[in-house]
Image (cartoon, rainbow, N blue to C red; front, side, top):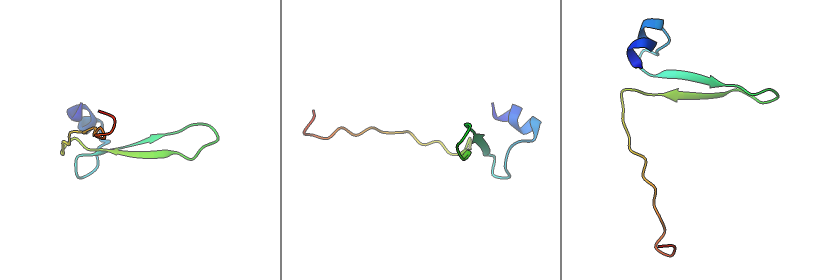
Length: 50
């Protein structure tokens, strides 16, 4: 995906892409997506539940 975005010229200098999500009647939500740093999301379950 990143090579295509680079070719289109939509990447930021750090290699990330800023995406604007818009919905009528709401302010746009700006999301920065990074392809250069990978972080694994971890879900923690409280001991009281398990």
